[in-house]
Length: 166
Image 1 (tube, helix red, strand yellow):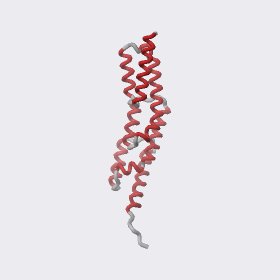
Image 2: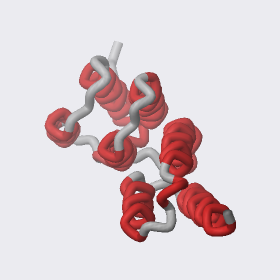
Image 3: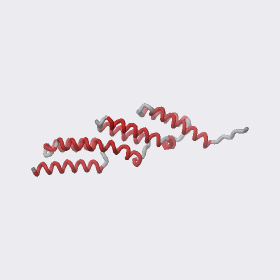
Image 4: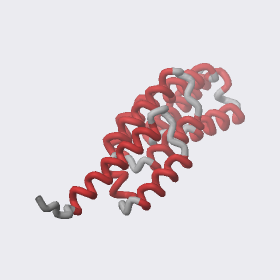
């Protein structure tokens, strides 16, 4: 029996090995840049296109991002640094916004609740410029989607109006 070289099958096998490597490198819930770099070099060595290989593992990448976000949300003390790390991870994994948005949305829900609590807590001091500036800075740190940030700013302004009206 004679075997013919099948480039499509060989490429599929390489992509599948890439997927296995990706799963192994993310199995502990971490994916630092040095691991991505290692994966990049093995991808190049195998003769695969980096972007094509990352598209191939997109369902795995989305699942990994979901796991990371769920873990971060569970402790309920979300920091601006965590948000920035999640966003960087999303970009490094090449996950488009329309796929990442539903996952990250739960993150933003918690942040909005946290900032709303701060606004309510600081309501008595909203007439002071330093407090207003600190709240604006706190909201900006989280890099929230525009509608959420605007809602928080409006909330702050409404509470300030109520305070002045009292």
